[in-house]
Image (cartoon, rainbow, N blue to C red; front, side, top):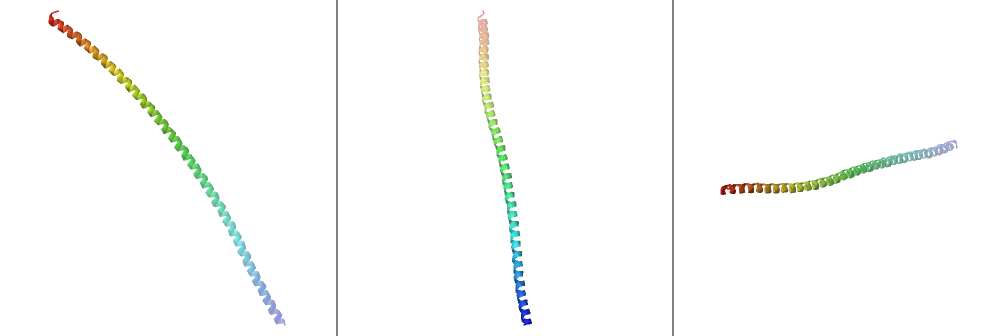
Length: 130
C-alpha cells in the first residue's frame, strides 16, 4: 500500500509538475508574445513618425521650390516686359532719327541745288558777258 501510495504521489507529482511546466511555458510564451507585440507597436509608431517627418520635409521642400520657381517666373516676365518696352522705345527713337536724317538730307539737297543753281546762273551770265 505504501508503494502504491508513493507511486500515486509520484505520478500525481509528475502530472502536477508537467502541468506546471506547461503553464510556465505558456506563460513565458505569452510574455514573449506581449513583449514582441509591444516592440512591433513601438516600431510602427517610430515608422509612422519617420514617415510623417519625411512627408513634412518633402512638402516644405516642394513649397520652397514652388516659391523659388514663381519668383524666377515673375522675374522673367518682368524682364520680358522691360525688353519689350526698351525695344519699342528703340524703334520709336530709330524712326524719329530716320525722319530727322531724311529732313536734313532734303534740306542739304535743297541747299546744294540752290548753290548749284546760283553758280550755274553766274556761270551762264559770265558766258553771255554780263
